[in-house]
Length: 474
Image (cartoon, rainbow, N blue to C red; front, top):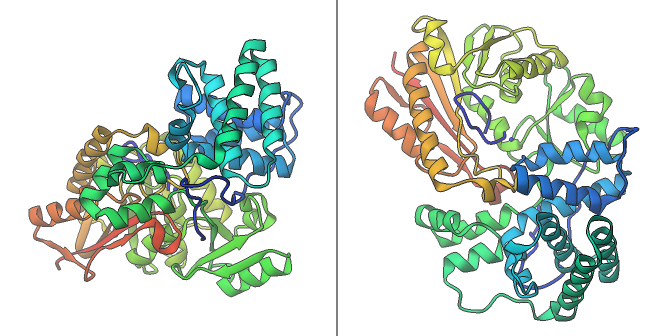
């Protein structure tokens, strides 16, 4: 689940690398193989990475969407797709730590450099300091050649000098001992200080550090079996016969972890509707809603349709499932997923969920899912640029929309019905704090489980998620 920014717009293991010493082992991330393109620009993996990083900085583009576009544009082979993806995500993830060290070597300061030069130094430092498999001299030579093509002799000379100086002093690049907790965690795991300070206040120092460390571990590829077409064990057997590593998710009953499969959306099994691509923690939402065949159900903020289609599968595709989203172009995303999976119970509607009472009468639904717009701070591992682009004011502001949504949709639930409220964030005010406020204002609702489910990224190597199940008193 991506970061959600409006009433209906969606907000989508092993040890992570540390920043206290150079050249920790890199973990290859999966990248989409690119299609053939007659207008392929000149350059390789690092040129593509520079293109992405520069546009992210200048346009505040989303890294995951932009990376996919650039990979297609450059038409790279599979190894270069993997290297570009690693460089882009790694550089963004470690941004403030990279800048902390680079500042020692750039006499005039990073802020005075042209944006493309700053991005070139950042991605080069990432390779020198964090990656094992690339020789230092190869990184320097490639960066100097790129600087010559893009700039002039003076810039390429500066880039050469800075990078060679970094290599000479690499072993001495350590964070000073005795840093205050906020600064230490922010630099060790490369998160903004305001966010670290906020999490320490809410969650404590130890848990905050675990979260920040987990946010720098590449996400696993997880898929959700379409149980209307085959069983989870059947899907695993199918994948293993094709030479892929597949194992059942320990968290989600319908989930499968896949290794070595690349972009699973490009496989014939995906096209045939045998599975969907979804994070394991997100799969628990439909499980909590517990839909039954024949019921009438509302998904208030449905796009791109992962939870919607899971609900339809769980109810055996028998019943009436209304999927609402505020954006007209996203309605088609939900429809396409339903069609691909062979689901007929899904009906789509384009509307602000706060106005659904104009479309449906009171007590219309047996179950309602409000997967609310949120700050998205549980999915930083998938969208690392988010931690640099978010502000504290934005986080506080999204609570207003969440509160309005709850106030407007709860009356559509019949007495005895179930309301599930979920987010992909870790923020108390957006999660348990929001639900507690709602329960205080609406005594006709009560908890339908002992306590809400809060999943932290370090617990199961999944996205951070919050799920609250409420029942309207009969």
